[in-house]
Image (cartoon, rainbow, N blue to C red):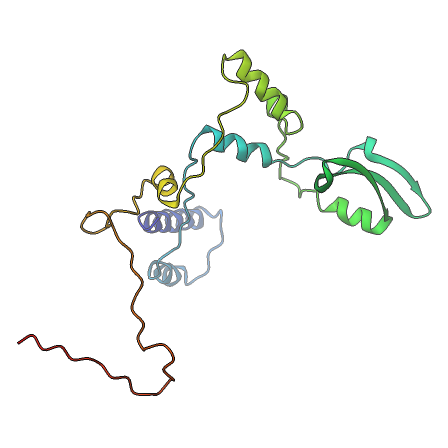
Length: 208
């Protein structure tokens, strides 16, 4: 990320200057001075770590979806300024229950799912559809000759997880490369129970 920072800064400023020269962007009169100020600061560039494998990609994409706000079959009744609809209570074993809201509150919640113009909904169909993903993936494994259920995941330590995801070995010193790297707590600056401001006797070691 530190290497990408000056590269992105240079490309961004160059593209901005080119857009100003062609008239695509109206730049201020003191743009040259502003550009010098931009180059004087270190820019922050974020780069996300790569996925650990196809299993993590499938789990991420399967949950990262924008569904419709509410399907028509879930609307049960509209009467006396209230809307009654069905929903699935995931805290109680996905039981289907009903809820009644005032029209204003119902519309408020509905508009939370409305995307601005230019944004696209992300919806997956087929065997990646979230509703049937568990059943269809099990069928895919059977057709591929794989076990119907994936092997259970074993809990990994922080050292193992960092090694697989980032390639960093926490047991190795980043400077000299020596291992194993032992982490020890620092000794307290003052003995326990000593009040602040009380002189502490420091032992003096004589090497003679």
